Image (cartoon, rainbow, N blue to C red; front, side, top):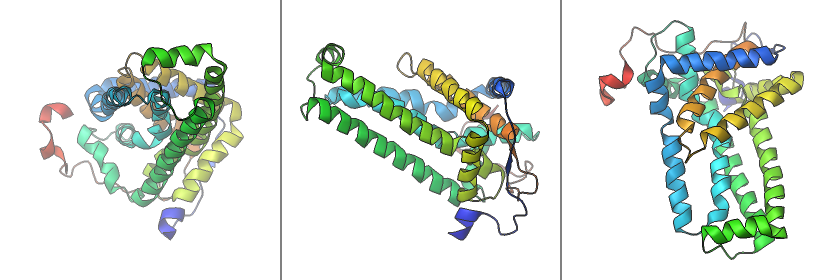
Length: 289
């Protein structure tokens, strides 16, 4: 548990935060797109679950007439995004280091020396997601009661033509903003930092928070960019997330590299690029080239 929280015992320095500007955000997005363009099959392979899961969730919710949770579930993708993009961070890390990068290499995060801390933060993100869904449901019940709409048309009509509907829209979006801001502050650079260095979950979280404290305006702008790209990616039927999610994942790695100085921190030791891939036999070779 001590290693999970504080990282390697031989740590000699803590990560330090740099000042970042709008130009750094733009450059991170450019580099993220460059990574995606160079490894498109890998990124889509990792993120195809997003549009598929979105469609499945939509069908499930429509089938059970619990339409009020459709939007909270879709928006919840952003809450687990920092954790779900781990494989993308690893691909960008390898490409930046000049190592060969394939879809199989993305699974190397499972062998990271910081996997305990990564898992702990992942559980935290999933917990926040679960609380968000519970809060969204409570807001609906407070305005409409426990009775669920019997059709999509009825739900849309009540949502936009009644006071209860507008209360749901305003309060629900305000609550969603709070949860999204919390995850953005906690997860902006914490997962990339754990992949890069053995610093522990506590240091990773504090570093992410310090980044926002030092660069509040720039990081708020980054949050707006993330929200806008995820919104565009959700249309239509979440299909665009197959592009938006990998680009943002790769860009997050490059933003981390610009924003955090890890000189003196114990580096995470991954397998050498010359060693055989552990997972190559599990997938057709065409996926990796």
